[in-house]
Image 1 (spheres, rainbow, N blue to C red):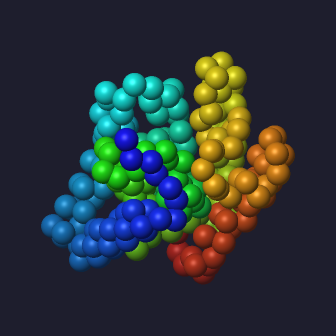
Image 2 (image 1 turned 30 degrees about the vertical axis):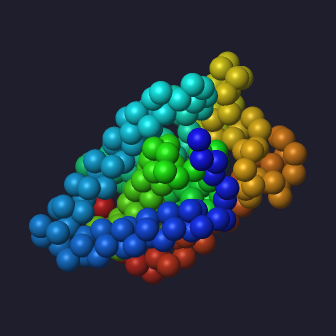
Image 3 (image 1 turned 135 degrees about the vertical axis):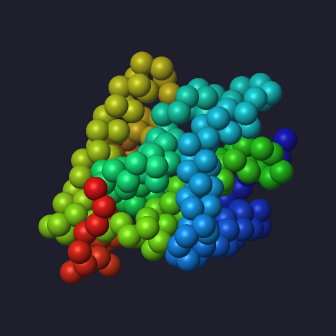
Length: 230
């Protein structure tokens, strides 16, 4: 079975392909009309079917691990939220998609917690799922008119609050099941940002400040622009 190593050729090729396809979907969305409807349909289907794809991808593997079998990772929830954000236009869902997608899911793409490499299905589905989230996070402001709430810090503060709710829930589930959802109980085995934030549980506290700062920075491009959507 092929082993995945970050920052290798297969990793960079996956990032390049995902970036090109994401850009194409966003460009189609900006055209409006039928191209936009098709783009929304593609992103919605990919996000809402992500967990099913993950389960199918791991089918047949001797020990996929509970973390890969239950949809409690942050990006599993982010994919569901992104799909519903496109369908319902609910502002909270759209806020979470933008901030979680660009602050958290991009980190997952840059430093994947992935052990199996190309051409395995878990590898392929991992990048499909995560790029679908990031593409949706960019699609909302660039092609669908989403803007953060006013005052300008309101949307990042809400996204940060819900991220903390998730971490608390993940800690509870991890204690119950012995899992590591959200990497709330231990760091991933592959290199990641968490390696530079101290030991557990201190890296969780360090991450709070970094997450809030990233959310605030992601809201800066919209300063002075009128919020839209529900």
